[in-house]
Image 1 (tube, rainbow, N blue to C red):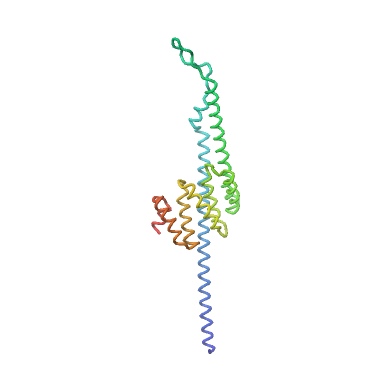
Image 2 (image 1 turned 45 degrees about the vertical axis):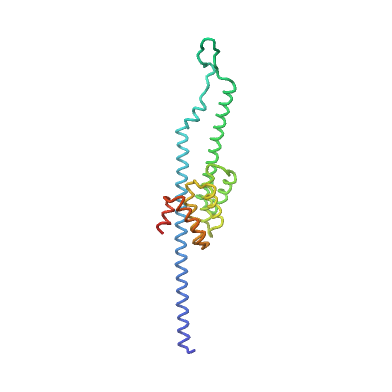
Length: 236
């Protein structure tokens, strides 16, 4: 092979290498944009969740539950039904009073438990704001461990999955596991459509498993046809 031919071959290899480098640079740039968008989206949704919790807490303080107020109404021991001829007065018996006091105490305990759960959940969310997704994973795991059947546990599984996607590199397996808990155990949650969409995206883009992706897609379109996530799929 002559010098010119070797030189031409070398130039072709250099051009090919440059093309591959450009492709990789574009892929890295696109990935950085996607990660940036993911963090922004996560920040916005966490901020919205915090605002909702604060609003709910303010509502509880300014508008106490009417049922609880009725339960806690004092009983006047001197009040009896009017007497009729040949009848004895009807008064509140000790058993009924004990039952009312027990019910009131149970209601108060339940309310306190929910308040404590809400505070623990808020702390777990705040961990993300303070230290990012990596720092928020353990507090959210601890919250779920301590509140396996809590009011906020379904949402906690969702955010734990989101945090696992937001770290670098993303932990897709852990994210999948937590999204699947939402789909199977919290099917009526407002987070379920997003969980199904995330599972569909992971199956499509990461696992490259079109059969599994179709299962999640069909379930999303069937169970939540009017959701924002279903519209993503319809328009894609």
